[in-house]
Image 1 (cartoon, rainbow, N blue to C red):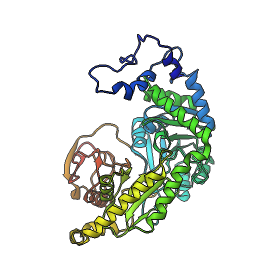
Image 2 (tube, rainbow, N blue to C red):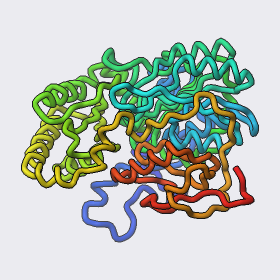
Image 3 (cartoon, one colour):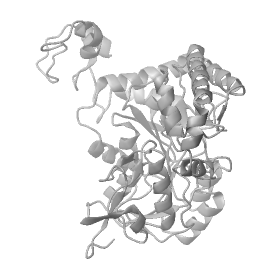
Image 4 (cartoon, one colour):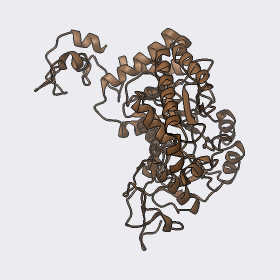
Length: 482
């Protein structure tokens, strides 16, 4: 549709202002680099349809996507999974409604709950035995929460996590559905699930009612493009559509939407074969690691490789830095692991480049082992302790409901060490993966202070913190209680 429109050679007297041309003092080759993108960067016209009221090509593309991914209804997102997470919450919750929420969710879920004014009961996730990384609440925890908070409007889960670890969603969904409670799943990193026998099943296959996927993350659409899927009769879809209309831009990007449709077409045309090169690359990497001083974390998703230094000479952050120095850019890191994300565009030659980099890093570590040993003290102890990933804090199993603060409160600054027992006045979000450890209005426990101290010492970056070094933290002042 977009190419056909561009080929008509029409003279545009509508937005966007570039009028399908490169404008101004462009560098040499700008037209060659961006010309085709300009040609298809259009607006809502008689032949280009309207994302907010689709009846033509966009409606057809969304219907085809629903059939491809196993949904009853699919909506394209041009604001990433963030837009979908906000919309699904706003479409379910009114102010004061209570929801059950997996504690280790992305910040966009927290933002949605704050915007909705919902009361939240945070459910403690189970942790992986090998790494201490949080995954999802246990079935027992979910059942207890459903029984205690029968008025809850929804159960909100996130799976997989950044490391490719998944929850067994089906029992959790069945438990919630037994109470006619809808299940909303942030499946940002699992858009490829269910599309190859080597992958875990998808949240839709597990019966979730609303599922948000970052199609751009593990599939092949453009950054910021995503999908929201719906099925069943436990959610009122018009309310979610209305929320999407409030959240999404009224001038959505047509190249982003086209990339979603092209991704769907590639999946349907090639089927599981689309993922074979990436799976072969992942297998080659895992096999070669056996001969190197590095190991990969066991994960359900074969396209996520979380690699650590077996001898703990490097933190995950340091390994990430060294990999980039050798031409390989990891997705994220934490105190232990550098996380690599493979996808449909990954090839075996990429695996060869990575393994060459790891071999060089291993040689560098051997060469300066004596210097590094003399500098390792507390940091090694930190990385050696189980459960010291950024997502490993154990929160109370069934806490009381809380309402997340939407307004920035009046705060003062105290040292991190003195913050235990105070009420947090800012977001503290290790990023990636963008999962809040603290939000405004939450009580700061001693365990959280210890975790933040470890993360800061290991080189983690924090979003939301006024003091990026995290030597100090903002807490609520007297008279502005949680």
